[in-house]
Amino acid sequence: MRALTVVPNQAGSLKVEEVPDPTPGPGELLVDGVSLGICGTDREIASGLYGWAPPGKERLVLGHESLGRVRTAPDGSGFAPGDLVVGIVRRPDPVPCGACERGEFDMCRNGRYVERGIKEIDGYGSTAWVVRADYTVKLDPALTEVGVLMEPTTVVAKAWDQIERINQRAWFEPKSVLVTGAGPIGLLAALLGAQRGLDVHVLDRSDEGPKPGLVADLGATFHTASAAEVADKIQPDIVVEATGAPAVALQAMEVNNPGVIVCLTGVSSPGTDTEVDVGGLNRNIVLDNALVFGSVNANRHHYELAADALAKADASWLTRLITRRLPLERALEAFDPGDHADIKVVVDL
Image: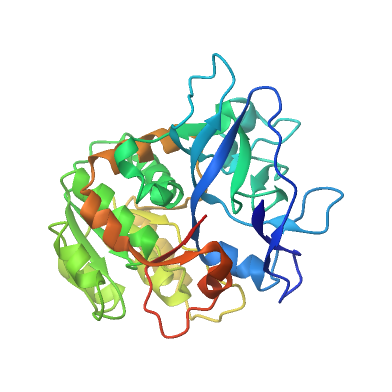
């Protein structure tokens, strides 16, 4: 079979190559790959910034945004040939820590977890793959064209799940949410906010291309001003930061509104100097009973929440998030944005 592979920490090593066909073990499904989403994590691994090959191997099969169709399934697994599925990315650490022991491996406390296509386990970027049935989630068959959006949707499903748990600390009836960034994570966060009946505002640095229309079709409002300006105008109850840009993340944390909840989902690059009035920031957070927290990855519960959210969404709207599709033999083009104003690039397997 063919697979998209890389030598972790070695820039320029990405290639499509022939690798041995997978053989399912006990309790595993054999899945034919349908498509693979490419995100910033994949591009960083391909550029040599990080990544870990499976023990004893030089190369890692890339890809964690999966979509496949079951070819074979063990009896009693709950799956059948033809089922549309995605594979969960993370696996708990072997100790396990208390969080992993309880199925909350997205909150692993000792860092010994492993992740498909990222850390020590081959990913889903191949024409066929195997996955344990208990790390597989079934999708509505109607999502064949857009089910590859499942993994990024799990990220925001977890973020909203955490926000709603925090809501329970005291009386709180949020009415508005500000989402900073209109990439896949930001737009999907806005989708889930709209599904909750909130007044959704999304900001991005550019109003060109499909993003303003996608936001408008959610019944939301699109902005290009700074996060500070928009927040001052709308006084959001919730902020979901999805850019990872240090200046934007800081402005999100500086939102001054009683009881505001700020969720950081964008991952910033270290080493960027930004002037911070720590005293003012601390004062606002304390006096507003505000809360700032980070959220990344997802466990099985969040995959199930994401599957429900996608099934409820307008499929034509989801389709518009996928701005470029490439065949596997041209997969390397997905790692060079060039002049493309992409939202989500997908490789068809």
